[in-house]
Length: 494
Ligand code: HEM
Picture 1 (cartoon, rainbow, N blue to C red):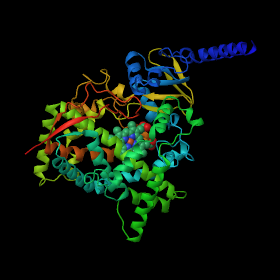
Picture 2 (picture 1 turned 90 degrees about the vertical axis):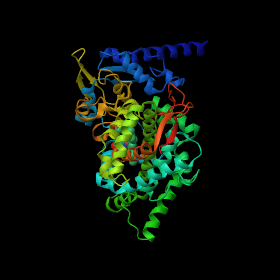
Picture 3 (picture 1 turned 120 degrees about the vertical axis):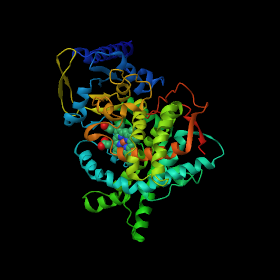
Picture 4 (picture 1 turned 60 degrees about the vertical axis):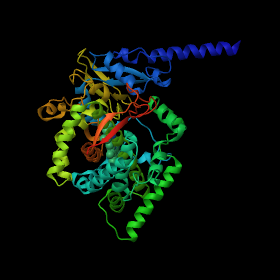
């Protein structure tokens, strides 16, 4: 009898605590959907029906007149921000109040990802960001450009060599970006076009597939970050960590023994080791590993979506081919760095793809200091409390007809001349915004540009029927990943 009474008592207390918690946003005058017990508003994600990004997009669209929407991720109150003015405060003007990402990685448990700027917090983030930034200047990009162009040529030769005319665009793009990372970071040839399963490709596959336990943990940590306190996250497995450590030390030893100075990321990292106190071998490996992952996967995803968009939008495809072909003709069938940077339509095609399919659909920030904001709809102040997770719904903003006319259609012209200037700040932010925006944006865009220019000059793209339409996305992947892949036909232009 006593255990039953105790059980009922505990359940009743839990019920009232949860009920009280669920009043958190209502009490503060913030609208939002009713949360469910334990799963909050992200239940669909727990049963793999939708990714958190899709859930946030749906909620964003439902609350058209609200500048913020109060939600619950499990039992944690989180704030989805719709108002671009408030987003400007969060990412730029009042950055000091929101400077951390809502991710908790223990450096002791995951020494490589734990050192990635994305995972670092507070002053430690500031120091590391300052150390790495000089590696991404336009001067450095110009220096690395010849490697990217060589790899773009290899990609064209590969497509001409393989007997099939249809190819999965992400798989192709990843071979290209991995080769680039091999050259730009480690100073080694990735051989991703020459060999079906080069060592570098195998390492990338292992790096990007953290095993089913890892996938489940990353997925759960996105929905319920406190879980990392009990089961610390490990993005980079022990085996990958060991291989990357060896790769870095071999590369450094080879340079030292042969007196080689190469103006690449590895050189910058080894210089940091000499000039910055506390910058160890482990830091060199961690940042090389970071560039390895960040530098290949997101850019490959974007390039594959650009190719997909062009395959279903023939007019922009031929317009882009005209621009690119003329540039090649004017430059003895080459595409120098300055020329590729000046191709306005090429840039616009990529930006328009990033608008429709940003690889990272939403960002999760953390309020690090109380912040007060007057809500437009009620004209009353809202105190965003320290510790509140903030959702920046990039995909939803970028496909909102209030900010972009006919948002589901592909119109690169939106990013040309005056049109581009008219885009409201913080309604388009595929690389994030403010001091914490993507560190590798220049490198990412440059490799996508040169790869795309070489493909579009040499091949006509059409959609292959193996691509499953309408596109559906893997609910367990934090990056937008189309289920079944993007299959395209590449017809050689004679
Ligand atoms: C086109 C491809 C890419 C896209 C769309 C992209 C997007 C993003 C986004 C949305 C963020 C979060 C920004 C924020 O928190 O406000 C980010 C952060 C970051 N990205 Fe990228 N990225 C790309 C390519 C790259 C490349 C090529 C590198 C490195 C070689 C890179 C390195 C980083 C790093 C280190 C951060 C963390 C910055 C920090 O917290 O200070 N990314 N990226």
